[in-house]
Image (tube, rainbow, N blue to C red):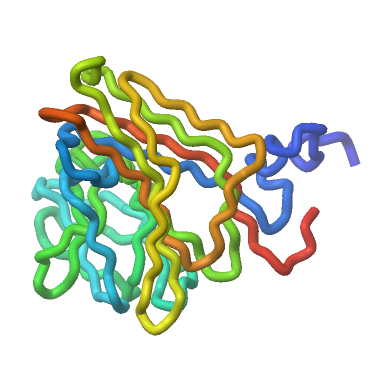
Length: 248
């Protein structure tokens, strides 16, 4: 068979993971952004508020703010209450609610897989539609939330966290902290707050040894402003590994 570089690994282990050539492992990028981070710690996501996690599997619905968004397909990736991965593709019906096929306990991402929406896309609980769980801003194509939950049977190894702000300065700076919520059973969570620091325009945390998060753990990367409001972006990067498998 002629040489095809697509199927052959390189000497770069991280590149091999990104290419999908390392079994039972994948790169996870966490992108978060919020333009109005104020004096309370919040994750950087599409609402300038704290994030509410479901306490049980929920029926959810998705819709756009533009009636013309009818040929748009959105991939939903989340977890059920056993922290098992759920994935489906929803077809938008403009401003009408589209009920998802699965019931979700966590939402890890929304991403457009077909079409370009003109409106803002939101995912709510159903039937009350009072709690926002994910959103794609107009023109962006994917949600940007510094929130991620590790699936059951996996460990997430965090290598890097970056924070950015063009509005912060020496008189109006930012606080950052890394919060993990660990499931210890009986609907109880132990919350650990670590890696708290301050920064102005840029923060870079590089780990020589990756930080391990076990399955069933919520990762919430939070920021707050020392005064007024700031624009903040938080990016994180790591490898998700399905443990108990033969690693190649």
